[in-house]
Image (cartoon, rainbow, N blue to C red; front, side, top):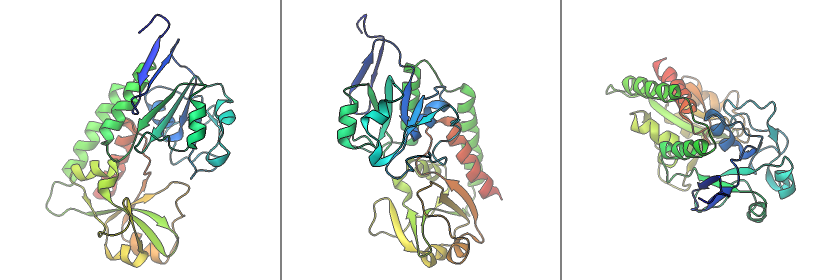
Length: 287
């Protein structure tokens, strides 16, 4: 590292970002910003994806990040280089679902952005475990001079132990993860495709595996087919762009006798956030 290079980080594209001083004004994709907050970094701004509202951030994705004082610069097609640079960030933290493509930004926008400011991309795709994704955010936070409190790791260990003990018996409750798709259909998650769900499976939770068929991440079925699976616990996608849960009728047939746990398929990748999610699942199973 030269005398002129004070900060250096190699991202998940293998691209090295450097700066003459440690970045202090971080603009991040909302999921990354929430993770960095749990690691002790307060982003100066956040941005969303094409699924998100261009004016209001999706609070299902923001975790414990306090939105007061954190600028939301927008989302979707209206998000250009000028909007991203308006708050004068000295680092942009984005995510990718593989292949190094920056999620939530037009490729040309991402390309031009890197001509103005260092861009770090963390891969949050299915090829990685949740722990591996969390480790990368932890490494980035340490490079920026912060670290998640040790107590967060202890909370996660305790949550894992509790959940493992709850499902240790031979009769495991059926847990179904889904995303509502209106009054006619639901998207059922294929657990092996979601890092957070794979953790539940590793701990012994009885996740329902949809039938083989079209859809790599989801199996789209009618609500009657979802109800026929008779889940005891439903992990329901609460992101703003997921179609609102129907209040009665087909949804009631699935959730009427089940415990419903709010689930964000774009999880905040920190020990504290993951411990909270495991605790919610454990509460539902215990009830």
